Amino acid sequence: MTTTTPDLTGDPARHRKERRVKMVMLAAGVLTIVVSIAIVLSLLSEAISFLTQIDLGQLWAKGWFPRRGRFDLRTIIVHTLLVTAVAMVVAVPLGMGAATYLSEYAPRTVRRVLKPLLEVLAGIPSVVLGFFALTWITPNVMRRIWEDTELFNMGAAGIAVGILIVPLIASVAEDAMRAVPDALREASYGLGARRRHTTLRVVLPAAISGITAGFILGASRAVGETMIVAIAAGASGGSLLTFKITEGGQTMTGAMASLAIGSDQIAGVGAAFQSLFFVGLLLFVFTLILNVASERVIRRFRERY
Amino acid sequence: MTNRSVPTTGDLVAGALKGRRLDVGGFVLVVGLLLALLISMIVLVTLIADMIQQGLPVLAERGWAFVSTPLSPDAHDAGIVQGIMGSLGLMLFVVVIAFPVGVASAIYLEEYAPDTRLTRFIVANVRNLAGVPSIVYGLLGLAIFVKLLGGITGGRTLISGGLTLAILVLPIMIITASEALRAVPMAIREAAFGVGATRWEVIRYQVLPVATPAILTGTVLTIARAFGESAPLLLSGAVLSLFFASPSGATLWDFVAHEKYTALPIIVFNWARQPQKEFVALTAAAIVVLLAILLLVNATAIVLRDRFERRT
Image (tube, rainbow over all chains, first blue to last red; front, side, top):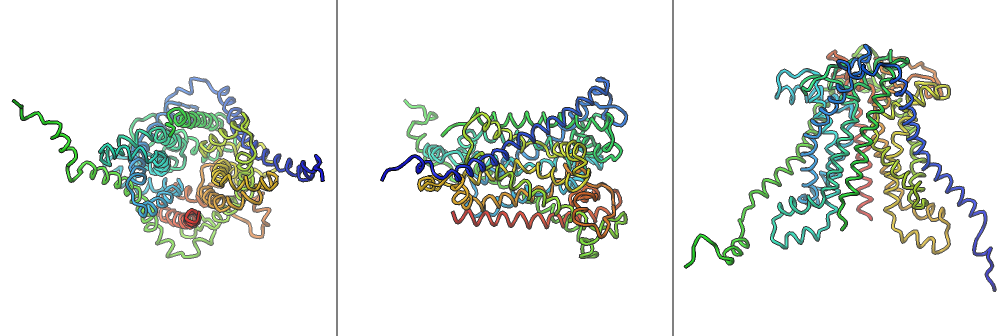
């Protein structure tokens, strides 16, 4: 009996089905590119029309008051950086401590209980944290430290954003530390190092690229967080530039949210409405830079074991 | 003549080997690390306890009526049924659109895609999309679904909001599904190819059955995330007023394509902005309901995954 070519190539119907399925899957994959293009185009078109409508000096006016034609970028960018800085001050020690404990010290059973709890914290919606910042963090934390803290203030919002990103930083850092091979730890113990020296001088430096990437991702999330600042940082309608975290102020996302809430702008056209897209474009670019940076850090400084 | 203040090598080795019994620095470090973890837990407990404490009076007084009555400007009558219906409707879109498209993309990227520039571009693009702030997706929804395609979606309707949320979670769906597929051992694929299965047959009958539990857990977690999301809905048309009428007798299609809608997190946001004292308790009560739903969903997913992980 001889084997002919048709036997080996198989049933043509199967091949056709194979090609069809592959095309469907490819189409789904390509759809993600379409989404990216749609995001960039919709942001760009309105942002450009915003820039052509206004006098560029308005981007450097006193304060962010879109309804009065004042679009001071310094105000909302400085406020964004303030909130992000407070968030990082809260999240980096908490996240790193949690990650180091879970990765290097926690007994198995403890880990099995605590890790899911961190994930529960990660699942708390940001509106809830915003309300918590306004009704709990402001009176119980901010006003204990600074008595004259305003009801709406950037400090409480920053702390809440920090709580929001603790699980993110912790899980990325923990993954990075657990990826450090045990041989390094054993070599360190073999040289007579204590556990804390092994943790601080062997494991942490070996995992530093992943940990740094986690910090950058956390910062990116903090910059883009909207609901917490919209509820707790206050200053709907506009704000003047301030460097005090005890005062209210609009961040980039806060400015967008308050433009969206103002029912007159959202429906219409005009500079205030389109500034929404301009700020959105800035936000998109900022977070994109941070996200790309975090990937670069991982790729550039990763030790291969 | 030896100077006694200079220790010999023997002394040094002996000293190093003996060591201090109690490693104070190490102890402080462990306590510090554990404290960091415990503070996070305490925050979580405080948050939940505070919400229950503030919201319980409303829940106790109103009981089931709080969940089953519509919005009202009067804090004593206001309920959240519209928010719950709206959120469920939105999740329907997420499940129907983001789940199949997400899994299909993941299958393409993990099982079919050759290592070309296009593939690498898609992968990098998906990762970047996952990092785009959610409010930017709201702008996308506003520009495309509410304004550009307003004729089809009906403008500020559940369709626009649902599509926006579906696109928001799509990259996360792809990433979780990809991870699930990557965890399937290569040997299973090779065995199936070895007996003459085509690629799709390998995926359909060997890879997917193994990956399904992980994919489903990831999907449940993703849906939970979408359920609590509100920033994109602010822009893509959820109603922000203190009350609106949902006409009785509206068909399901009217509900989806013509009526105003809101969602549970949007109600929380809206009430949180009200200065009156009654609304603070009302907000906390709505948060308790929201958290109860989310914790239930998350816990289910985590328990499922834990079970699945222990078995393999």
